[in-house]
Length: 119
Image 1 (spheres, rainbow, N blue to C red):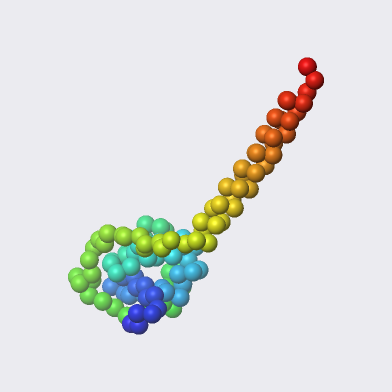
Image 2: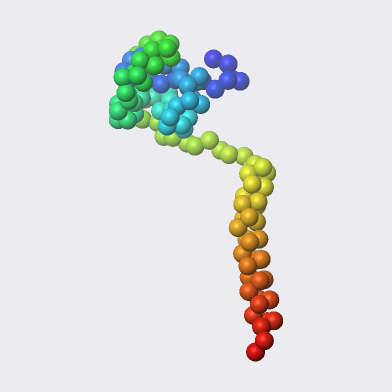
C-alpha cells in the first residue's frame, strides 16, 4: 500500500474492508473508523447496530479475508497529533473579538450615560 494515501482497513469477522473511500461520508465521522482500524472491529461494528443498508454497503469495500488469530483484539487509540494551525488561531481570535467588541461598546455607552447624567 502506498504511503502517500491513507488506507484504513477494518476486520469484521474474518473479512477485511478498505473503507478509505467512505471515511468522509461516514455518518459517525472518520475518527470512528480510524479508531477501529488494524484490529478485529467486529464488536465495534455490531455495538452500533448498523442497518441492513449499511451491511449491504460494506460489500463494495470488501478486499479479502485474514486469519483472525493474527489480528490483535485491542489496540490503544492514539489521536493524531495536530500541528499548530495559524488559521485556527485567527478564527479563534475573530470569534473572541465578535463577542468582546459589542460588550465593550455597551459598557462604554453605560459609562457615558452614567457620567453625563445630570445629578
